[in-house]
Image (tube, rainbow, N blue to C red):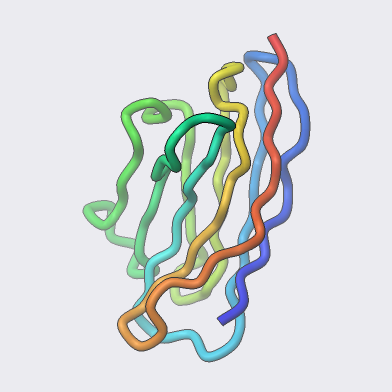
Length: 118
């Protein structure tokens, strides 16, 4: 499974950015996708994840982004989006998309940089 992110960039605090992710290859009908982020000197943090069932109970958001970030999926597809609003300088990080299913385990993209200036 190959995972490719797009989007990201530089924005001023309070602004918005959106990320996209697509997984391709031998993907499974039931899967999960999500986003981690890695800032210099900090541990990798799970930002958001959800399955492709469209069930809200499958979704998770880190407390640091809840209410500001929205993750969405195309139902039944292996695409994921992360809408990031009210961005803060502490959101600056490399954002990595992952795809996971029981057959393939987890696959990762190369990451996309998000920089929020104060």
